[in-house]
Image (cartoon, rainbow, N blue to C red; front, side, top):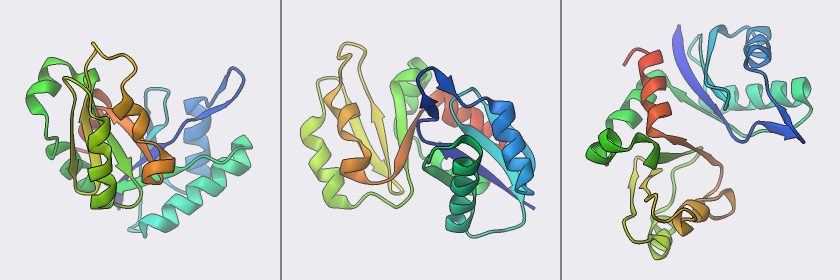
Amino acid sequence: MQTYVALLYSIVLGEGRRVVMSDLRAMTEGLGLNNPRTLVATGNLVFETKETEIAALERRLETAFQKTFGRHVDIIVRRADDWLKLAAGNPFPAESAAAADQVAVRVMRKPVPAEAVAALEAYIGKAERMQAVGGDIWIFFSRETPSSRLVAAISHKRLGIGTSRNWNTVRRLAEMVGG
């Protein structure tokens, strides 16, 4: 059995409607995926199944989500060992220790091209930092800049399918998968 992490992008279903995590776990079990666990109510899922191609798992979960909840949501899946590698690759460990909610990673379905990373540099504000690691984008943003241009710039339109998680979530998911 292989352990996987699935990240759902924007699970708000409509006016005032969020996905209930017990319903998400039930959907996952209905697919025959084992031991589904969620972390906070923002679409973080851990489960086990036999070794499966990542793209096939993403399609399967997205199709089931659409059927169950009536809305398409992009879902990014990583193997547990890849998630642990992502967490270990945090380029901002000191900042994470001091202000974990100010460090985030944009987890990408496909690695961000170097030219897209270079284009993001124009959006880095005072007291902000950014680094691409393994095709994902890590950022440290300042509370002094509540409307960060960099945070706004790391969108689907500019980078492709991905979703952001702060260091607290990254770390807790790593703990859930055995790190």
